[in-house]
Image (tube, rainbow, N blue to C red; front, side, top):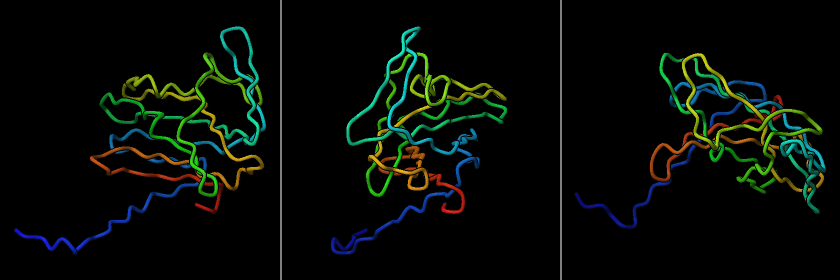
Length: 168
């Protein structure tokens, strides 16, 4: 088989689209739900009894409540937090701030999403928590796209994007 080196094909991946609050089912059958973003100038974290306020000049934070549920009859690993990213007008933040040990205290209160620990979800089990990302200062929730990007091969991904209602 000989291929013409000048013959190139472009494959465009069209992500699944959801509005915040709608479920997406991963390749393994685990359901993911992403809550509407809360965009703030600073967050306060619980570091095991001490609190610490984070702010960053020129940036705000987009806070996301993430839940994963395994409705299958088999054990599956929860979605890795490295497969999540946030985009605002071309600015991509693919590294959530996870320096908080216990979770967030303000403006929302709750534990962090544990996806970085590669924990298993038994049948019927769920997990959830918060992640927060740097976004450009002045961002409003309607500008935020939350993306799930699961590797399914070399340079291949299964993608779902969440946006504010009606804009997905």
